[in-house]
Image (cartoon, rainbow, N blue to C red; front, side, top):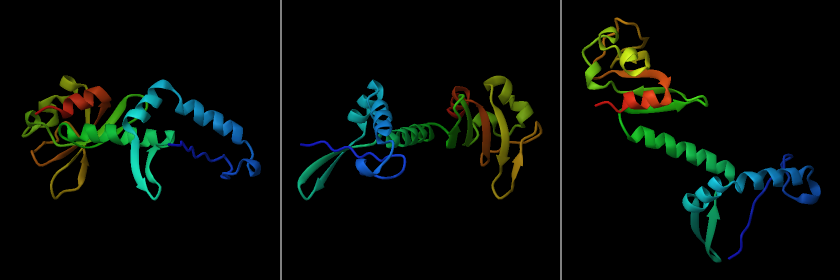
Length: 164
């Protein structure tokens, strides 16, 4: 079984003789592909077998696809566990989450439930059923049908979202 790599130069041309800077692109892509943790992940989780006209062909994701698939898989895993409806994480470990409220907050105002003091996260806004989105204040009453927008450090937000 042969192995085929598809590379595209910075100028968009795929023919080496017609392209400029192709060697630098090869170097960057090979370096990125051959990092041990990425290469093992590609070989282990990002293989596809396709039945083509010449038989089974093994396809491996490009390293750009690796990042996209990896981020999507992490996001889906977070959403499946707990009360999260949507999750967005930033590079510095900060996250914003759309989630259903934990039972211990339902029927109480944000001041009464002391979410920031107990969990280290901030409720930014609340969307009640049939109403407009509102920015959260200490007097905001949380019901079981509300959707909360919560921000904070990723681990703290995930811990809060996993509350029953």
